[in-house]
Amino acid sequence: MIRLTSFLFLILIICTPVTAQTNYPDFKDLYVNDFGSLLSSAQERSIRTKLKELRDKRDIEFTVVTIRRLSDYGHEEPIEPFATELFNAWGVGNAYRNDGVMMLVSRDDRKMRIEVGSGYGSSKNPAMKRIIDRKITPRFKQSEYFEGISDGVDAVVHNLVGEYPGEIDGSFVQKTKGTLSRLFDLLKWALWPLGAAMAGFGFWMYRRWIRFHKRRCPVDSTKMQLLAEHWDDKHLNEGERTEEELKSVDYDVWLCPECEHVTIEAFKAWFSRFSACRACDFKTLEGTTIILSQATTSSTGQKRIDYNCHNCDENYSVTKVIPRVSKSSSSSSGGSSSFGGGSSSGGGASGSW
Ligand SMILES: [Zn+2]
Ligand SMILES: [Zn+2]
Image 1 (cartoon, rainbow, N blue to C red):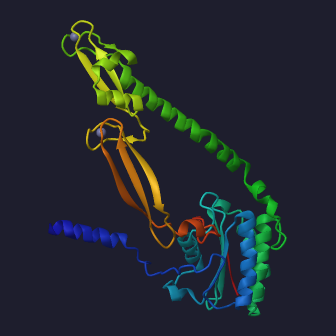
Image 2: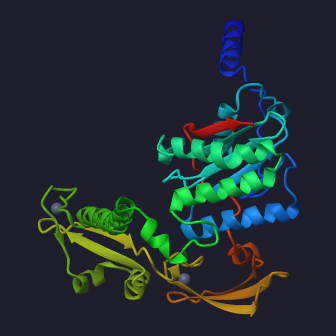
Image 3: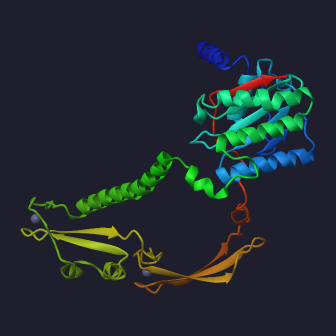
C-alpha cells in the first residue's frame, strides 16, 4: 500500500510541469481584449468593427490581445510560447481549417507577436514579419499603439483575404471555401444517408432472418411451417387478435406438420400509438391527450390523457404537468460567443520596439 501510494505520488510529480505557474487570461471579447489598457473605448470599437467584418464575411477569426507584461501571468520566457499557448487555450479559428490569427502586444516587455493557426503552416511567417517591422513597431516606437495595431490589422486582413477592412465583399464567403472542403462537404452529405441506409437495410435483414428462418419442432425436430395470417387466428386468444387488428403486435404461428405442435411468437411493432393495458396486459390501450392549459416561459401548463382499452373495459384519465418553455431556445440566434476551437503550432512572427 505504501509502495503504491509513493508510486502514485511519483507519477504526480512527473506529470506536473515545472512551468505550470503560467495563468492564461480568459477572453472577455472575441475581437479585442485590451488587458494592457493601450486603447480608448472608441479605438477598441474601431478595431472590433474591422475584425467582426472579417469574421462575418469570411468566417476568419482574428483577435487582438494586449497585456501589461508577461510576468503578470507568471510567464518569464519569450513571448512565442505564451502566444501559442494562449492561442490554443482560447481556440482561435475554425477547428478544421485552423485559420485563426491572434495579435498579442505586451506593453512593458515591448514585445509583440502575430500568431497564426496551424492551417497556414509557416507560409504566413515572412508576411507577418514584414507587417510587424514596417507597419506596427515603427508606430509603437512613437507610443502610437492604436495606430500600430490598427494599421497592422488592416495589413494582416489584406494579406489574408486580398481586401482591406471596410471593403470586404460579403458575397465571397461561399467561394472562399476550398474546392477540397466543398467536395468533402458534398461527400459527407452523400455518404451519410448511404451509410444510414445500409445499416438500416442490414438490421432489417437481420430482423427478417430472426423472424422467418426455419424452425424445428421441439418434439420431433421436423421443419415447422409458418401459418398464413388468416389461418393463425384460431390459435390466438381474443386479446392477441385485438393486438393484431390494431397492428400493435404481430403474431406468427408455427405448426409442426408431423405432431401438430404449435409455437406462437410475438413481434411488437416499433412505432405504435397503443401501449400495454394495466388491466388486461395487452398492447391495446389508446391514450388521447387534451391540453388543459399551455405552458409559457413563466408558468407550467397542464394536460389530461384519457386512456381507453380496445380489449377490456379499462377506462381512466391522468393529469400531467407540461414543463415551462425554456427561453434559451429562442434567444441564442445572435452571433456566436466563443472561438471556433482552432489551434496553432507556433506559426507567425514576433517583433520588439
Ligand atoms: Zn412435431
Ligand atoms: Zn385492457
